[in-house]
Image: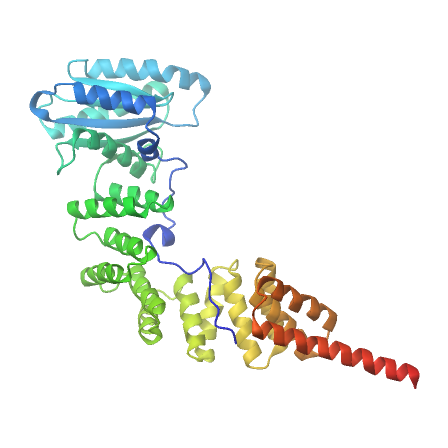
Length: 407
């Protein structure tokens, strides 16, 4: 059996990898922080130059639902301006268009944070009623921890991204989860260094947030700093010993380090908590194969294939088990499924060729698959040996037919 296991299907898990209850936004407002549009720069400049009494204020980023008609979109700016002026004025706040359906406002001179929050809700409701549209809103306040005025604007942008994970009419105040989402976005953009800063800042707000700790560990893991990753994962386990994603991630770390026994212990614990998580079942099946515990591996691979029938890797590993058990017909069916999902899967191509050869049928088809496997992995000795055996059988069959003709 081959021990190759290079697949994007096996990776560290974050909350968004396993949780389908929320839908991320199609576009992120926080991306504007890297592009620095004219509108963003203009608002930042105005905010920095404004003398704010008491040095306290709120910032709200507002988006009118994108599915409204063109006529509503044209009314949006005038409606927003009229609503702003009915609640505030230029001495108590300022605002800016971010685009034709998105705005940012800052305001101050309020009696209490409670009344400020009530004003925000009232403003949101009035705009929604006037335009007959859903209003999404993210809110941040200053002062808050050690964030600057400019960072407070950034926090409001992150808060509206946070709100966008829920309904189109959600209002969300900036918190540690907003920073987790911002970090996840940076992680998606391969900006792991910047994601780490977001996660660490989030942990300053909530030091026991397991999602943030896990996300930080994942970042360290993908950057190759396994010791730091393990430290974070173990911090999370100290808070909740049964946190599934964290247990899986520790198991994956031990697998990367080559300690298969410890990896299996953690993955079996994860399986005990939830026997239907694809990544756990797939990796556990793979590691049990490496330990030559084939009968124990098969149920996990069966489960992985049911959970994610688009996973060619689960079928490939089942095929390898059947080959090892000298069940070529069953092996061929599994390899065939894997090849349909990934035609460049060299292991499955060679395995399928071997299954046909063992059945003594369709040797010319087997030859084609064996050659294709070497096209993808020209230095694989096992694949070359399988090809050689198939070629020998074809030549032997041809020679036998020629002798019969002469006779």
